Amino acid sequence: MGTKLKYSTTCHPQTDGQTEVTNHTLGALLRTLIKTNSKVWDLILPYTEFAYNMKPSKTTDLSPFKIVYGVEPLGPLELIPRPLDEKLSVEASKWVEEIKCLHEQVKLKIEKSNASY
Image (tube, rainbow, N blue to C red; front, side, top):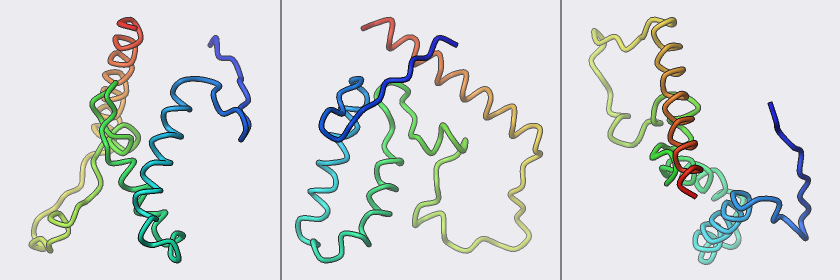
């Protein structure tokens, strides 16, 4: 498949631009959230992860949640109780095709973005 394994270390994480940008973004997000809550930083980590994974990528215009699971996670408004007679199941084969289509769209967007660089 043409992949190359590039090791990064804590002293030199710059194996590629993507890793460097991700580390910088997560560092800034953690500093912002933990600044006023330094004693409970471990309780903030799940919220930080959730917030990061909700943000759409500039390359794909989709969030990591959408790319991996095919749907955005539930927010506060979606957690309102629904009527019991409402069914939300999706046929499995249809779901698989939707995810494959989504992954193909993401792949094309990434290739287009790489070509423009």
